[in-house]
Image (tube, rainbow, N blue to C red; front, side):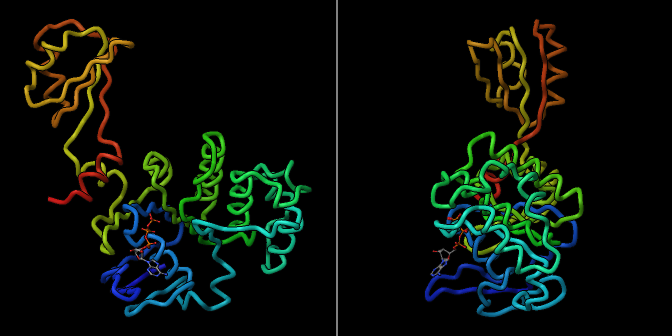
Length: 290
Ligand SMILES: Nc1ncnc2c1ncn2[C@@H]1O[C@H](COP(=O)(O)OP(=O)(O)OP(=O)(O)O)[C@@H](O)[C@H]1O
């Protein structure tokens, strides 16, 4: 999928402002951005659901509106509705009939944990169950590319974890996955590459590890240590104590230097852990600007 110098305007609103981006086969890409950033507009263009005001959009080497390309793409929009009177199994068969090589309904039901729902009418499903069916439908045509716009909205914790497991497997099997989510921990757990959009512009487009390195924040935590002694090691660090677990959490710009200082002071501590910035911290830093 690629977009070249794409502008998309809705009247006065410029939803995408000269965006260029290419996503190759087999990538897993998280598209992040605040509300109204232009994420859904970008995905809609890539899927051929709308045309750009100017610029070029290609999907699998051709026009995204070409039926041949659409056969090879699966998607779940942010909001979707299923025909209420139809049973889930009937919907799967109905949608499968539109594809040349659909995944058998039984296999899809097994993969997405829909076995118990096949005989249920769609109108009787909970919001989360409907969402699971909607996501499964994105995969029914055995797509080469799947575009998922906030797929975990409405899913409980177990449903989210199960979905992410399926997505990771599909990615391992070679499917290109493009996903948006406001749960950055989910993007961190799935995507190898992160695109950050704000006000219609691409602010970052890098491998996940590089995006995380863009923020000079690291976390050091120890238990049963004297917070005052830790503050003295790096006065610019942010030191917070969790009395329940007797953990002192330190946010520092240089964890290596902090740990050397900690050992050097001889102050007692145990259970040392060090970790880098979270994607959420990187996202806040990137969208906040210089
Ligand atoms: N059909 C439309 N008509 C008018 N304005 C639109 C339309 N679709 C999107 N917009 C506007 O374009 C901008 C980008 O919207 P878009 O839905 O792409 O954002 P988003 O990043 O997906 O946001 P969210 O995280 O809230 O879903 C917003 O200002 C939105 O109001």
